[in-house]
Length: 227
Image (cartoon, rainbow, N blue to C red; front, side, top):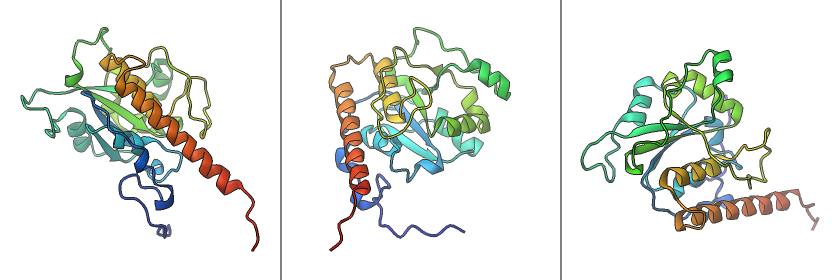
């Protein structure tokens, strides 16, 4: 049995209070809804970015798990959240933020993803972006365990920018944090310009987050002086 965590934690970002990141978050205006499927090991991960992403996106939701209840996941993917602009009750079209891995999927026995028509025929206010928040290995397992995710059209990133995620090691070139990947996907779906307000805000938030984590790392690694 695991021991309870004795450290008081922020109820919003789920970090220890002394490392709370809520002050870094800045809300941005967006029309695409964002569903963040967070692996349980990311909930209290100091280097994780899923909670910060959620804090910056007013029209986002977080579900924590690895293998989700099929009905709950179906409702989250395709049901109306009815929390803001869904006044006409029109359905949302969910897209999975995930690279094209058809060969690997076939080797694992995963269902082929639905084709993504380009240009995408739905406006941002009719879209729901699904982001798997976990390591590459964990995200693959979550995809494998949840057939509903396999059936979604996939949105691969175009012209992927270099990652600024200096606090976590990437295993392959082009791998981004959940925050960076979602920010780039939202820019694609909204046609945000690089210097636009929302895009610039998300970039600045992430930059400050990485700087804060680097400072905490340096502090923790510094030799402690004896009294």
